[in-house]
Image 1: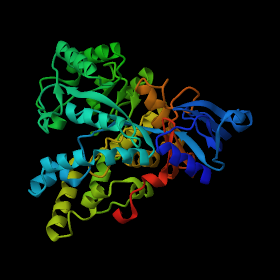
Image 2: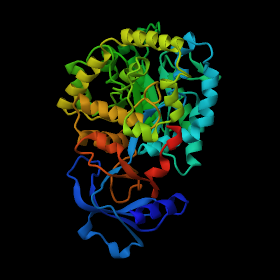
Image 3: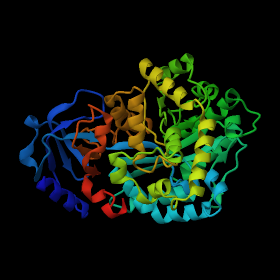
Image 4: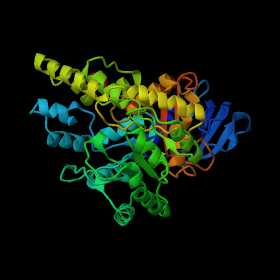
Length: 470
């Protein structure tokens, strides 16, 4: 343990140990295959140079050995759906702002910008070594990635340009568009080219209809050719496409648009058997985002209970808005009660529909990815990935499936599997040393001893929320 802590402190200081071996752990490589008992990883610089049984490891060549016997090592987790423009505080909720004029969007934006570095660190604390922001104002997105690149305790950040959808929803956020419209194939191709030229890594698409209050002449089927044009243009640049839909009708239509992954599952009714078959046939990855609605309701009906990872890694200033808002009063309690009823009525049977779809997709052999849609109210940056995985386990997905979803499948959907996503020789040294076996229950993935990001080892204790802030 002393060796591990020493190594982590040296690496955190900015110098990477050459040829460091992590010896004796159970290796869960992210592919879904059998775990390697008594395994060893060897890190050289920012990459992995050996992954396999300790008995065959070239330990004589390493300069440092770290005993991780009895521990479990997985690849670093990948959250394929976050938004830098969202704070997760109740202040961001327009319904709260309507009830309490002292809470403004401008103040929340200022708080987010000031808090960006700490927010990025919450991802590393949560074991998320790669985070993908799925759209928003360009200046906010670019600031998120630029800040991460300047930090030692930050995840790898990828950006998806968009969201691009049919017209009908205008959203200006901090003075710039938060959604982008294209009603023709030419307009769509032009937007995709523009995001590519700006340096984006992927494209976020969507179809918006009555479920989002959008009055459009398009049906989902009508809009598929425009989405196909986006996928064709994006794939020509090597950019994957992730698509947002909310209804079963849109889901089955959009499955023919050439997308790589669904960023949501349908909220109205379970997806059809035909849609399930299409997803499996085309190998489209699916991120259910199962946690967003129930966790929001838990905040407003005052039933939220924090898990251990939320206590260790969640932003205390975010949680303070859930529990203290900003101090207890009967007016605030009434506002929360009103919002709880509003969201429960609005969401209706969405959770049952999502869980039913998840179970049928799993039974059919569909491939999942993990996208938390952080940071809505109740699903804060970083820790939301664990909330999502735990709720998916409760819905019926086994831990091994969830680990593969959060590692291998996510990297594959992003077109980055040759760079990261599994414990494999030649890939980036992004991995977690866990104290408990995540194959027993995915809840054990929250008990992290060390996070290694591109070869830099950071003891988890250095990332924890300060005790006085909890």
